[in-house]
Length: 109
Image 1 (cartoon, rainbow, N blue to C red):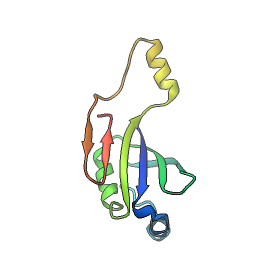
Image 2: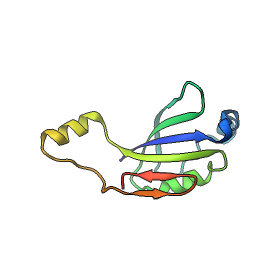
Image 3: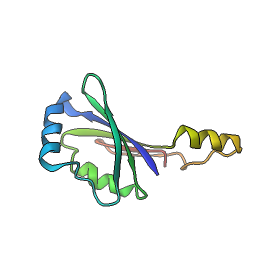
């Protein structure tokens, strides 16, 4: 399943985030796959497309970064998948709900 991860750098401290990234890498647990990312022009947020089959892996990853970053995690699908589902009269996806913590949230479950 695909997820859009929205990271907001605490206190707008992108340099601290990038310093840790250079020193330790992404620190992803096995099974959580990074696909691509984009950074807001002002440098305060990062949008990462990720893939995994076990949403609990996000909690492990967040624990490694939550001193520097606030997270919002949203289950997504491609536009092509959404259009195909609507053409077939199906609206597929996870049941609605949100798992929230002060530092993170997981939406779309």
